[in-house]
Length: 379
Ligand code: GMT
Image 1 (cartoon, rainbow, N blue to C red):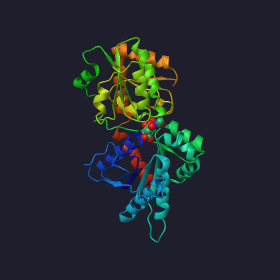
Image 2: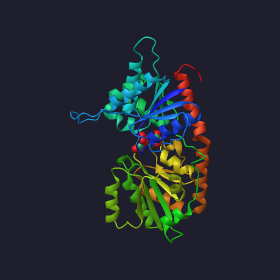
Image 3: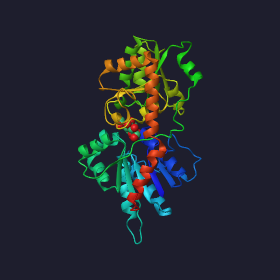
Image 4: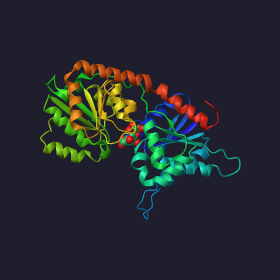
């Protein structure tokens, strides 16, 4: 199939999933074009059948507002007029599902036209946070896409409830290339993190430091853990809440215990150097960051929100707590850090769960089946 994938390039789950999907589809013999403002964060340039189309947004001094929707729609139409495109796959509804819809409508005009079919994948904040501010246009684009997928049953249900959507939405979970995402201990990095304290324990958090991730709660839990055992906290990623949190950490005298390392390409090494992953988000439609930690055998302590219960089975492949239950999260972390056998058991069960349910080779065929059904080719 000839597929155009629309996604955000910045570090964020939807862009990561779209990029990994594009790689996997190209490796499976499809022609894949990724349309974005920049090359995505996890872009691999050496995959045959994969190409990058930079979305152009011509500037004009009169505009104070970026014309992203127009630029993206224009790029899709231009691409589909230069070569046949079967599927336009929009990742993140705002505004990608609308751009896909507009492009399909434009390409449908004219004699002998073969407009592409459109697929919209909903990722979470495009419905739960951002989408609610654009509900009429987002709802319209979702209703009129040829197929819609959501990354969890929870997000599918939220979409139907909050936007009053009355159509079929397929659930296709996030996934990982399981041959790459596996525990790979890195003793040098572990030593860099712990210094000359071999018994020191390592907590880790990875996110884009937005309010929904509640990075302040990560530090609150860590502070309580520190009262009970020797530990450090590694904060991976970047975003608007990072600098204020760094000031809070400084003011609390925790600078030598909390390290902010920014965005990292080799997440497997960082995760494999950690003992517990903390994810106290207020919302999480899936929790790709949790899945990545689990694949590296790192037990996750997370909020019981959104799609996280579809990823983590409480007490078996991690722990789920009410989002405000800082004391319970602290107790779970302390239990895991002080009981090595439990930590290893839960870490291994987590990785086995990922391998059984969330690997590329299991999930990508679900997208292919969705495309085929959309093209009327059956499954
Ligand atoms: O979590 C974010 O702030 C980024 C956002 C995105 O779209 O990039 O993540 C959402 O999509 C991910 C990939 O499907 C999911 O794993 C995340 O759970 C989801 N985030 C939220 O629902 C808050």
